[in-house]
Image 1 (cartoon, one colour):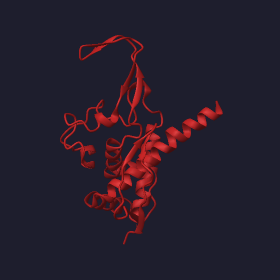
Image 2 (cartoon, one colour; image 1 turned 120 degrees about the vertical axis):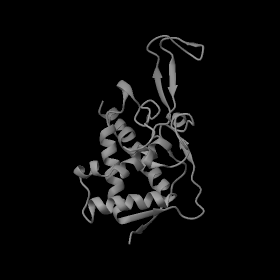
Image 3 (cartoon, one colour; image 1 turned 30 degrees about the vertical axis):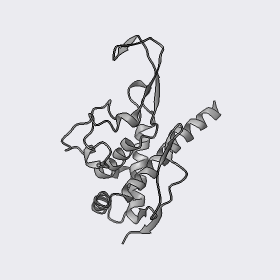
Image 4 (cartoon, one colour; image 1 turned 90 degrees about the horizontal axis):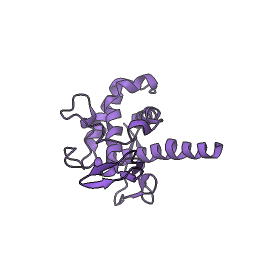
Length: 201
């Protein structure tokens, strides 16, 4: 039991967050306008002091950046579920007990569910966004009774990690670096994701 819980801690509570933050820095390095808005929010809310738990609620754009990151690169891009009862999908009978796959990677980039689905637009997650997000179209932490129990911890941890690093540094993708992904249990950069750190002025 101890071994199993340690495995879950590392896989569900460490690797998913680490991969998501890696994708976050990659996306920010490709979107200087988003990065500038992030820095402006951090400077206004935090100044030079280190962020704390109490600051998370006052960093909506930082949170939106993370939300948009896990939309484009969901930590677990394929979820398996078992049908609890008979059903019919597109005229196909689904017997009770069938193994079903829910694919956040596809849902999160579906053109009928999202405006500009392949674009990095954190503003879509702000409170005043014109289009409200369907809770079943956005599943980075799954949904329903099997939702990730570490969801809130992961959100707070990620927002604080972004804020702490972005206060002091900018991360840049070295010229000529090609970035692609691979899916095992989690969605990660294939090979590695080299980034150059430089101090903010």
